[in-house]
Amino acid sequence: MAVAPQSPLRADKCMTDPPVEPLENGDLLSAREFLCRYEAMPNVKKAELIEGIVYMGSPVRIIHAVPDTMMQTWLGFYAAHTPGTAAAGNATVRLDADNVFQPDAQLRLLPECGGRSHIDGDGYLEGPPELVVEIAASSASIDLRDKLRVYRRSGVREYLVWRTVENKFDWFVLETDQYHPNTSDAQGLLQSRVFPGLCLSVETVLTRNSALMLQTLQEGLHNPAHGAFATRLAELGAVPSGIGKTIG
Image 1 (tube, rainbow, N blue to C red):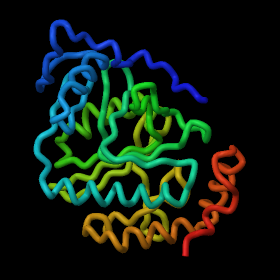
Image 2: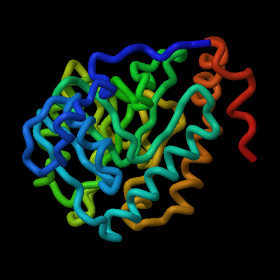
Image 3: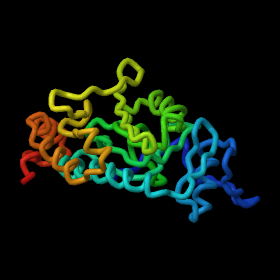
């Protein structure tokens, strides 16, 4: 039976004497201590450690929740038709000793398919997912400052930010250790550089048209590039051959 890699950031050595202190905004902690305190607060649904500083989530407004659901649906649909990949929403990700994030949505390659992240002994994801989505209020958000720098440094290859107040959508691609804006193709679509067939129209997204968003993605899954990608994953032993032909 496979054994999960042992993580240097594991939280299983939490001190219980004295009792674990609660998390508070602005606490300066290591990843290990952050997770010890977070696990002791099951009532807290979102907290992150960004460059060693604790940030506690606020109540979620509908202006955040709807885009959040759309992005998780988009990535989940892609992953459902591309075995060898995995999508997740609001999962805790250990990036390094000072950064433990909980991105709104993510898409990753499984380790056996060349992915750089894995599930550790505590059940957390460790290492950078290939693609991350954050729902932000505006360009002043921490998602486009500190978190962007950490994602870039950690090697997240594609970083998407939906700025809900400004009604803007950014898709960054990591090239030569810097993020550069992704550019639309001849059809006006943004295409993933890592996941062939994963595409969207920014206009469709910003108008909250989920049905058209999924229709566009379904067309992308018929692209020969997605079929070739699926074949390559099959050759790595992750999935049976022939995927990418199952979309009606």
